[in-house]
Amino acid sequence: MANQSIPDFVLFGESINDIAKYLQDSLSKIAGGFDYYRSFNRQLGEIIAESLERLPSSVKQFAVTGWYPTKEMTFSEIHHMAELVDQERIEEVDDYMTDHIQEIKDSIFKGLLDRFPERKNILLSGINAHERADYYASIPIFLSQSDGLCFQITGYKLYTTEKKKPKVAKYHQKLKDGTLDHILLQPLTITSSLISQNETGDPKYSLNRHLVLHGLSLDYGTISNSCKAISVLNFVGEILWASNKDEKINAT
Image 1: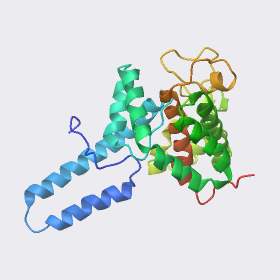
Image 2: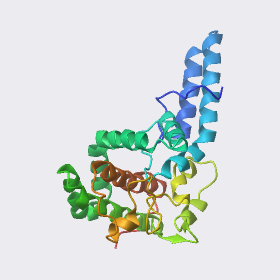
Image 3: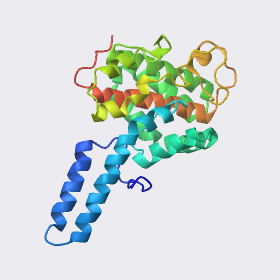
Image 4: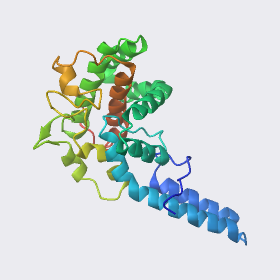
């Protein structure tokens, strides 16, 4: 079973309850003697369960690169990205995720503007810079807004570390183990290449927030890095926000 792939209709942002409902509905439709199809759905359930079990580690392994998953990605895509990282095929991860973010960026931008109207002017500055390929301008805006939104939502800054671990991991500790939020927000528990405060950065990865905002990186202005900054902003402004949308801290 482990070598089988989870179907691509199962998205990273899909509710576990929705997945279970899909399986139950499918079984109900074929109830009445179609043993083959009942067996197929049981196997599908096993594949999904196995994939869910692997998902927390895959999400963390993927996020080490500084790329953050979107709700539009499938479980299979997340596992594939993690496998590429394991194989140190980082350029392939960069190319794949750049294309993915470019494809869904309009939806990402609209969602951010709708959810955080108080940040409209700042977000539009970053969005417009990205659209005109001024990535040296877009990237610092996206990175700084990720930090501010994380604090607004959780009370912790995204890039602040304590004993080489993100302080925002304390927010993750409050989430119930095994829940969808606990799985989706695994990146909060690691010091990714984006968050690391190493003064020289990691040559394997192309973007580091500390080096950019402190003027120590002079060649960060690429479309891939801007898309990477969008991915973390989207992660904070959609996935993290959704985990706490009923209790989020009001902007000041």
